[in-house]
Amino acid sequence: MHFTSTLYTNTPAMQFFKLYSFKKAAVNCDCQSFQFGFVRFFATTCRAVLLPRFGGPEVLELCSDVEVPQLKPNQVLVRTRAVSVNPLDTRMRSGYGRSIFEPLLPLILGRDISGEVTAVGTKVHSLSVGQEVFGALHPTAVRGTYTDYAILSEDELTPKPASVTHVEASAIPFAALTAWRALKSTARITEGQRLLVVGGGGAVGFAAIQLGVAAGCHVATTCGSQSIDRVLKAGAEQAVDYIAEDVELAIKGKFDAVLDTIGVPETERIGINFLKRGGHYMTLQGEAASLTDRYGLAVGLPVATAILLKKQIQYRSSHGIEYWWTYMRADPDGLDEIRRLFEAGKLKMPVERTFPFTQVREAHEAKDKKLIPGKVVLELEFD
Image (cartoon, rainbow, N blue to C red; front, side, top):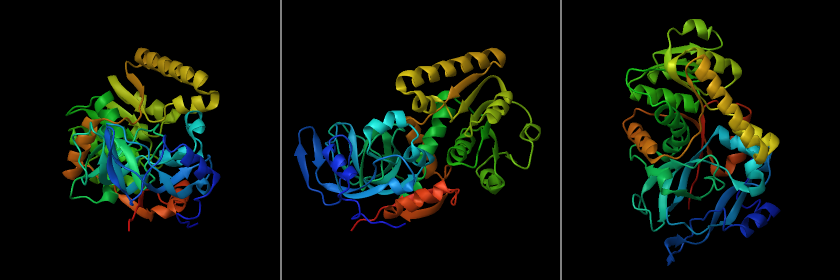
């Protein structure tokens, strides 16, 4: 299902996107630099993968002349070299977050990025033109990174270590920041504590194991049999095959924090029962998005808030623990720590396969069909 940048240039979605390019778009490599008001600005067009409607991989449209909006003072224009395909990308394409994103279609998907700084806003001081960077957008961003040139805020980027490739760097930030926020910002893990990662074979779980080890924690995890060796090499002291073993019998003792990347009722029950009093249970599968999709923002969000509050009160009373729904959020301190661990070789995210940017449909199809269990990265080439 290969397609090129010339196939979809004149689609209705493209015409709509060009009309609203002041809100969401990108630029290309044929750039001209000039001073415009408060920002050093690059004006031209580029390729971008648009999501004009929700559906399967076939709905993705690769357009060749999407325009760039004006940079804000705190924003950075990045020439994209590699972007990873996250579960959030495929879920959003299929309609996850519909209540938020449907009125804003067409969207550009993508959260992770590695590339070079092409232009900066006038209030950007930590990054400069020509610098290699990597980072990730917030989950609710409308303009993603599936584009030749992406726009991120200064605090969503950090310098890329020279020792790693763009492909390697693009696989790290979104998953690692999700794990970092749970472990460091919410649970505030410290040296000597015990951490249980439910689902350590996935990207967020694997990042959490390494962050926990780097913090001096004793880490145990559950995962599939194919991930056992990998998570043990990453520093987990115990890895339990959740299919072949009884997790509740195999794992001994109590934990200070549990990060549940699976988030079904059974893993929630098990995770909470493994916690010490005063411990933190954190799940990636909060109900806010699903409830707002079902009932709309006006009803769904208050319902989700009420459910979360009820669970927090319930578990604080019955188990003496703290219960959280956790999400990725841009954090300069977190990104800086991730960069330092990445550069030191203490945080890695293996990439199982790369696809050319023009084969984004094939990449999504492979992830949908679970043909590639590990990280998939899209590579962008320039003339």
